[in-house]
Amino acid sequence: MAKVEKSAISPTREEDYSEWYQQVVKASDMAEKSPVRGCMIIKPWGYSLWENIVRELDDMFKETGVKNAYFPLFIPLGFLEKEASHVEGFAKECAVVTHHRLEKNADGRLVPAGPLTEPLVVRPTSETIIGDAFSNWVSSYRDLPLLINQWANVVRWEMRTRIFLRTSEFLWQEGHSAHATEKEAMERTRLMLDTYARLAEEYLALPVTKGRKTAAERFPGADETFCIEAMMQDRKALQAGTSHFLGQNFARASGIKFQSFEEKEEYAWTVSWGASTRMIGGIIMMHGDDDGVILPPKVASSQVVFIPIYRTPDDRPKVMEYIEKITAELKGVLYCNRKIRYEIDDRDTGGARGWDWIKKGIPLRVEVGPRDMAQDSVYVARRDKPHREKTSMKRDVFVKEISNILDEIQKNIYDKALSYKNKNTVSIDGAKDFYEFFTPLNQEKPEIHGGFAFSHWCGANECEAKIKEDLSVTIRCIPSEQEPEKGKCVCCGRQSSERVIFAKAY
RNA sequence: CGGGGCGUGGCGCAGCCUGGUAGCGCACCUGCUUUGGGAGCAGGGAGUCGGAGGUUCAAAUCCUCUCGCCCCGACCA
Image (cartoon, rainbow, N blue to C red):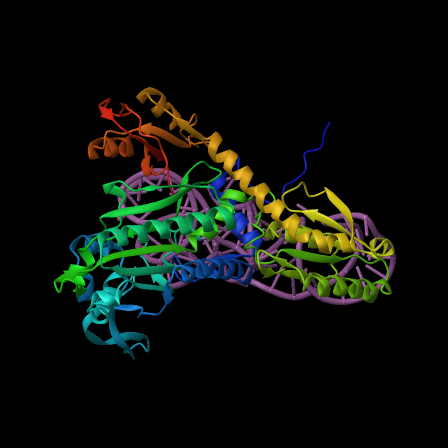
């Protein structure tokens, strides 16, 4: 009888996907819950992943002319009130600062004192305060386009939080731009969406569907919202980046006006775009397996760990010296235009070391012992392969090939994710099939089911709402890349000219 | 915010129904032995049972309130 090998994470994805996710985050040492409700502590292994994502994305923005700046954490209440639908969208989840001092009360407890004349809102997003600044910065068409980005934290008082996926406070970047023409603003909106798609696919190895949001799913105050949607292993959709065409709504609200070449006063066209630490959750949920995280090599916190093996105390210095020789050689190797990031784990804890790194998702584990040294080789294990599958490689070959191996892993996990996404994206034309697709077999404890339903939708709000009501399924996006095709709405049967992606979502 | 579940050493859990001041596995520390792989043996440190109040001679166990977490729903990156 074949022995079922115990996985490092329990429960498995199949047994309980949500719980698996919690356990993976814990086991990988990426983040943990904090004493503050809904807020997380991002630990070094998670934070360096974030730093690598930031670095790549930041470079991409700068290549398109965007400059970084920083705006206040606090937004005067009055600013938020300026754009009606914007307030409506965010009012329910704002943290508000009402006092500026603490005093001891009779019991010796600190209590807020010194009420503010105007309360300050902790930014849920910065359109309004950046818009206010833009109104001062822009006076001529020569000042446009204005392309600004900030890396910041924001706070949205969420009812239900999940580490990395939805926390009350999270880290992100928010880009904000102002343009002289509608056309240029729309081009920027799409360019930033393409940038996110490139980051997701080429760096995070997350295949995504680019598209446009329906009116119901739009950013509060936007004319159009574009997004990239990824499919997780429980077949739910995760929005991994958004780009908003704000029309002239915020320009009117904040007074971003300029004098055109024709000497007319005009409102600018503005755009905003954002991506957050949520992407880390996406990486975990898309690539992870029952042994933990699998990090995409290009942004991995570290790409390779060296694990010295020695029988006798005498072996130790020799092995360490050999490893240092290899790491010195690696300093001359570039992968994805960056230096190879490595760790050396010389803890004396035997085989448990290897499992720690498997759970953390490091792409390559390299064991080095006296036997390898004797042959001038190393023993290499890849995180995208079964944990026992290891290959002996000559040292020089390893150093020469490491970039290629990392590339292979990157490609391998992307392909795997893509085929999973494709396999679970289904064109569905009838209401009966549609309802079946999204209905779990076991209502009590729903199994992983559904996926992306690529179906016709008539465009009516009522149909979208009914499906949401019945199945908790929403329109994730109207994919940009699709051929026009006549069909019938899966909900009401009326005429439709294009398909949309329906899915359950995070 | 509505429905459900749960809070016991770092992690996972038992004990609670039938009150008598805490136990297991992993992790951690020390020693010896092991050593190509999530090591073995021996010894050891660590929790007062989410918090507050109540009932009682006595509460992790019963009652009330409260906070937090997780799942489903509404809302959202």
